[in-house]
Image 1 (cartoon, rainbow, N blue to C red):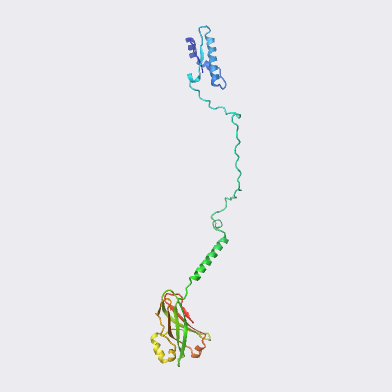
Image 2 (cartoon, helix red, strand yellow):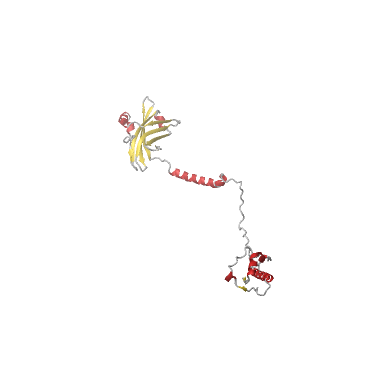
Length: 275
């Protein structure tokens, strides 16, 4: 930076009274070096015009800026670097999408069954598969009779003058379940050749002796009475005789269509039917 030292008091006083003379010459876009040189030239011109005598000398010295004045601030708007200094790089171009965009209609409703439920064909197939599984399970878990058996011997005696026929039926009952079988009721069904059906419940065991005395034919091939409340353990079998009556003649009974015994156990939905 250029500093000007004036030895005369007159020059100093005149400069103090007219400080604006230093800024009389405006410089376009002055740089720090040009501003220092301009101030030095103005000072010399001013001193020469006001102090023409030889004793009025102006010793000048140029000192670096760092030794005399604080650093000047950088200009507010520095000039941009030239294009030759840093080569400009091309801007990256956005990559094109690999897949086409999905068509989206903002007016579509997404809370309907068409949007939320699977196709009807898949639903029907699933329903059919579930129905088949349920049918198989129901077939294997269906109720079955707890026992089985057979009718071994039948004898009949007609009661004179009453249009009544006493029938002694000897049968065998087997418990095929894994729990005890308790007999609740015993009944017999008769179907005649003319299409009539008759049913009667087994007589009490206390009447067997009286029937056997009156009609000895009923005692042939008979067994001990099989009465309600009879208990059979799992896998056990029991042979017994029941006596029933039907309002038919001996001839109609001999030409019967079918004769069956129905045994209903306790706590079982299905009876045991013997034919």
